Length: 483
Image (tube, rainbow, N blue to C red; front, side):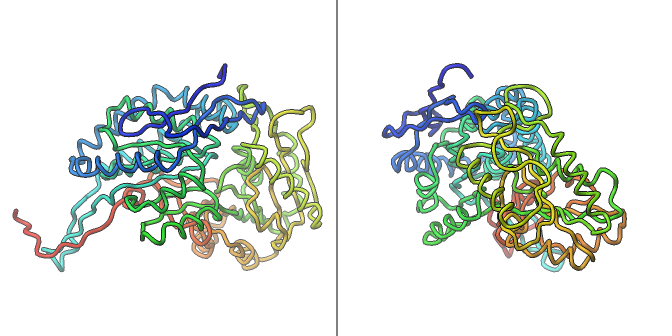
């Protein structure tokens, strides 16, 4: 990105403004450990100003027609598509997604989400009958008010568009706090929103960390809802902070997905699962990081996983290709290294990869694609979310045993099933405790909700459910159906 970019500004009430007090932080490019930008972390005065702007804008914005709000979001989509290459470059520099993947997938998912919300919104009934048994009883869906949005660094635009777009479509006003590690894409998104001509105060952005702006939004009396994506630990802290003001809190948290591979799985099942774990350098909450394999197929699966790991290239984010890039930060790299070593110390069989930097690399936060076999569900690497390119393979003998292992976790985001037996797939889809089940490599349909259960949080983001997440339902009796 050239020389250090000065990004010490916030987007509040329709304008870029200077921070209330200097509190600077460098944004580090994980590919080379060099600073690429400098931002400011907001203070209480900045948070208060953003919330006040959103609160002042809410009455007028919530009173606009759905058609008016839809037109603004369609304009956002038009501009976003035009600036998608810039968005990909920002994401590549701030969090290390490889160049091609950053444009097509990281930035591209923003396009997909906006389009899906537009489709769902066009058919959304804001006032609908309770049912034929009560013809004059209605259910009305109303905006909540000022919403604080706290987003992570691993899929910046995925989470920003899953929160901002449905929130403003449904008549709310928002204050966005993106991750301070990867804020550049969100600042570009603010430029897109500004160009689209949203009224002042509908969308606001304040950079900051969790202990600062994150906490300030969580306890602010004028914020009616917090929508947070991140770690389970932080989600618990936000829930506690928000409790005194009785906010609505929607949490999308971590995962430790189980991928059940049966002996009759298709020939690409193992490779597909391994590549999914390594995708985005392992930094996806829905990654199938526990591969449970039927024992008769177990050693074959281990060898296939080893081959994929050894074929997976690791390189800078700033070159084209299908390689994986670095992880986001030195803190993240250190955590992953500690957990890889923990796997070795606890007796798992290291099949590929391992601790340290890849061969020939001496700078950047790169992790060797790592596969452990002979893991049991009591090991640390099977219990904790590693958030790196590390796969744990666990054998099982029976379907019942596989379900028991898969469900024996605090998490419940996404589980996966690989078998040609359709009856078994259907049965397991109901028995596995998770918000999402994907089978035989088939992705969820367009407009599906993303979200989990247990320590993965219970948010539902995307489609109709993603719109309802940002509204309250109102029950009305005595409605004049002829008026």
